Image (cartoon, rainbow, N blue to C red; front, top):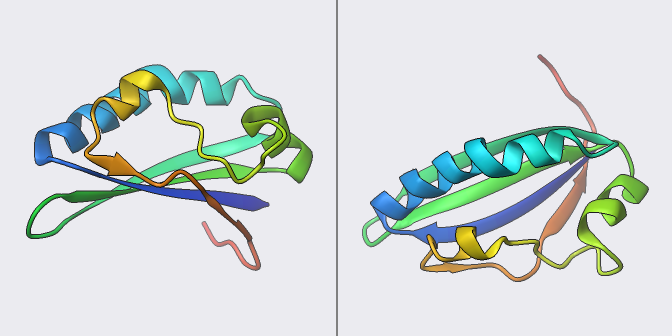
Amino acid sequence: MIVRCWTARATPQGARDYAAFFERALAPKLRELAGHRGSLVLQRENETSVEILVMTSWESPAAIDAFAGADREAAVVEPEAAALLLDYDRRVKHYLAAFESR
């Protein structure tokens, strides 16, 4: 399994709105993609904003390529999502899962 990680920053209201948008609009689209294994949206408040960490799980590099396109490490951010954020990373990081427990 490969985990795709991306971070963004938002106001507290923007972070709530982003999580709702992800659940309503993005998660259903991701579930339709072959090779997508799940999503997790994490939030951490700091003094000036809320940090958002999005982790999506994929079966293979080919599954990621089908989602992200030719530049696998380019962030894929819907315009509606971008409007809710103060800023966000333009690049993502991929990690190979060495161990998973449920």
